[in-house]
Amino acid sequence: MCDPIIQVEVIIPTQTKYLNLIGSIGEQIAKDLEEYAGDREALAYHLNLVLTEATANAIKHANYNDPKDTVRITIHIDDQELNIKVYDHGQGFDLEKVDIPDFEHPKEGGMGIFFIRTFMDSVTYNRINDGNVLEIIKHLK
Image (cartoon, rainbow, N blue to C red; front, top):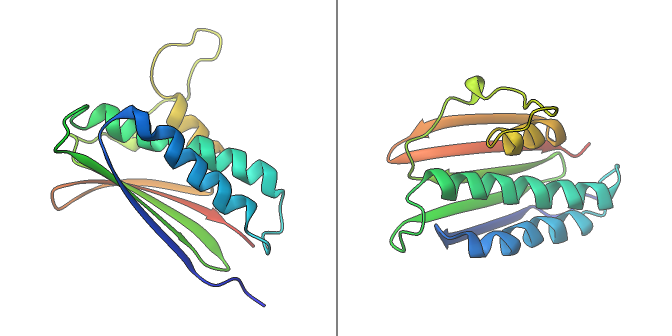
């Protein structure tokens, strides 16, 4: 029997104080995926990290601390995959130009995207209408 489709949508102001909330939502969802064949505890940790990093990037590169601006996060889960979309109104960036971080000489930037790419199966970033969307997919089967 397949799990029902889960759809979560969260809209937060562009303030970092909401990052723990976003990460914990992903963590709890992963722990409840009974049909997931892999390690649910590891997936929970990965989703917490991925959602926190993706949202932090959207906040940092959007209108940071502008109470009128928001970041929208959607999480869609069916029996095949988990799909996360993070929408922002920032200037955007070229995902293909984000280098693999130099772990011997760390500098600011690039670590979040590196972790997202490492733990998830697909990562895309596109300009849409009045903003941007980072789409992250994790296959569940």
